[in-house]
Image (cartoon, rainbow, N blue to C red):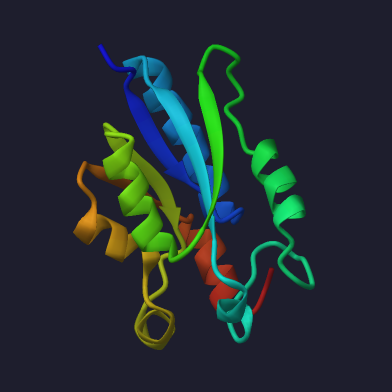
Length: 152
């Protein structure tokens, strides 16, 4: 019998950090392992986009080290990391299919209006195309309100 897997994509944001707690709880309760994935966009995509890394330029070695710090707190939840290059939504859907994942658990920034129209929503694309259930956790309303008003 194949091991059950929950896919947890991360972009190293606070929304992803918050969703990890839920992914870990579900994995522990259901006896699944976590597949923790970060999809690095090709360098040209970084030209005008938003970076969560706080790095001047994307660097695969640094990103791999950052990815290795994303892990469940409970020692009894098995996990593995994967760093992949490509389109985030497309790669998450592909990996979920190839790994026969039980579920995808991820965070979202909850953007609306013009920001969502211009940037798109990776979470929405994953929900529409995923081969398995997707559980999306939205960033806390207080944090979103602070970001929209210019506070940090």
